[in-house]
Image (cartoon, rainbow, N blue to C red):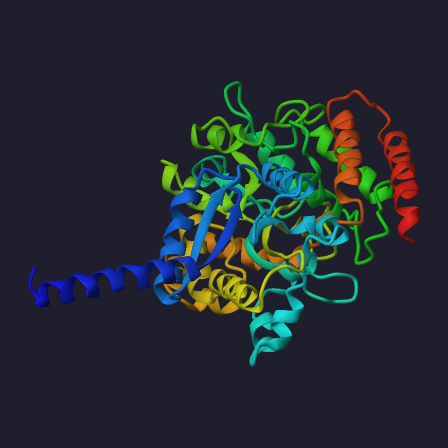
Length: 433
């Protein structure tokens, strides 16, 4: 081998060694995410990871699909409680904040926001209703809105027009009137997915619209047995009993959009995160509107909705370096940027969480062409905080179990069942007060 060849060989070896060293020095961000819809979440997040890595040399992202929201929470808890590393960033339910903050698993995003040159502009671009569950009672932001939603009303506009209705319902009396008119032997007039052990989210729309959310700003207080809360569940139960517009006990979550697309339901309550799937799968005109869950107020409307979906959480047990934390925050900023939120909203139907995203392509053009995309955003004016408190998981289990017993008819006296549940809840929260 001549001298030139040896030199080339050594140069190649040096480059390989340098590349290996750089690869070893790369910061790897383990990113866990769930999916609650039929969207291709794995493909979408891999695309985002590729884009981020192109823009951020020396940082790589490892996207890990972890199943449902509940699966994701349980997977992370199992790993952390077993001494494992867990994720660096995860999309978890916005209501998981207190559960993870109490254990010291997550760090507040506020410290990163405060260190930004334009921190106020960054956080103020998010819709206030979507920030509510991500902040503690003192106003400190812990998690950043990302995969956000509200339930919305989907309706078969062709069926409504055929039956002589020129507008969707604006209160629960109109909801029942239209649902009954569109109920046939082979078609339900209205499906509300409250069957299957997790009715709280859909139920909250009725409680809010009846005038009293079951949770407020104080995480030590829950209002589950108020007159409004009881009236709301009694009306919800009646949809499948006295009013006969859907199945007794409600519909199952996954079956509801399928039934709607198959023409087996004229109207459904479901997440805006299914909007793109429903619009692309329907062979009829799909109408979308605010949830008319309550009795008519002074303006004739009975709108009300909880927010929902997932936020971005940063995990650190104190062992991460400053460089690692800065890389992690860069990934959070990337996912929450108007450009990615615009793409995410257009691809899935989830609400783009910041106002600027709605002026950014491809969402700006899509929302103009299909006004349905803007409905959940505009419904935020009627939206309230999703249920969250101290001991969220335990208390949510009590509420879900109680609601299920009422909706299925096992507990005939709703007030008595909710009084008993409230007593349990108050005893749990007493230690936090």
